[in-house]
Length: 104
Image 1 (cartoon, rainbow, N blue to C red):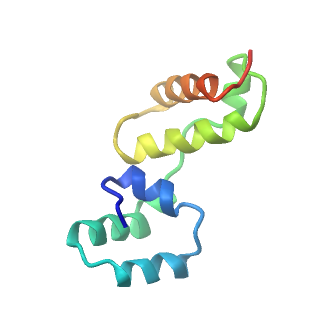
Image 2: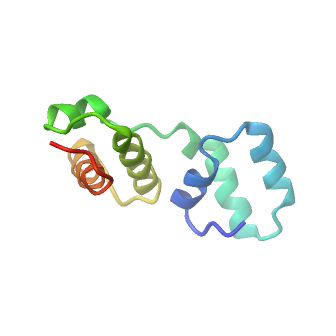
């Protein structure tokens, strides 16, 4: 595993079954990577955003697959401590949704 941050681990594991995550934890040798996986198991997998796709729509964007990508990457940024609070989450997600092709 080459994940170097909580966000990278979140991106890698957020949709994986817990059995896989536990197996990966047992296979990883580096203490730093073990710690990141343990943090994912105990904290980061429960990460919630204060915003939803409804907030992106209310901001004038047309719903699309870009919403899911933007919200996932906003969770990654939150896991890394790069965004805090609803306003920061919304700004980050709006920028990403536009970058990923969501129209207004």
